[in-house]
Length: 240
View: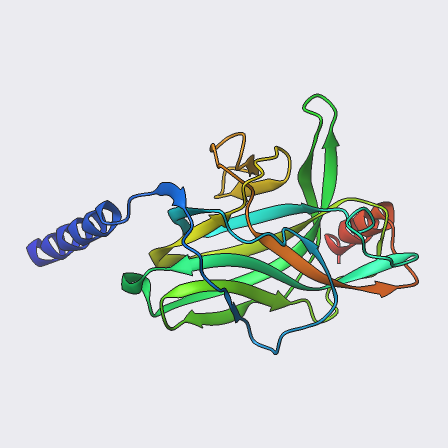
């Protein structure tokens, strides 16, 4: 019993040291080329979301066991699909310091409803329509990564004129925390974060200096499923 207590205290002490060595702070992002990190070769669809180069870096923000969401509006963002679109791939930028690698982690992505909050005048993430399979990835060396996961047809054709959120999930804790990347346009109602307490606005609730760097590749399709039908399918799935 005494040995078990000593081991427990040692683990607690080590965890405290690790936490103390990983302070969170926002700062200017050093100019750096992002390396793509995913399971397949780079794609080539219509790009939507935040395509800006990082302006700010939020050190040690990404701990794992958390989710991110970013507002997309494919039609107003310039994708010329006539009727509908399919999400093919979703990206989020993460940066790993020299002492944070190699880091093994799991990721899955999805597409969620955008619910209009009349009182606040912003969209908020709603029900998630579809998600990808989970990918096991490794950041082998330090640097800036544009991490992506393919949907592999997991999301149906969606209506092009509606608003949605792309989602990025890190289901497991990271051993060492990665940095998040921001642009220089801190607009409310665009970037959200959920660490188990529900979706919170990164700009409004956490004081981010810009929006999270997330984007997606989409393709056009001709038989879209509207939001109402998407929700009905999700409801039916609960009773299968």
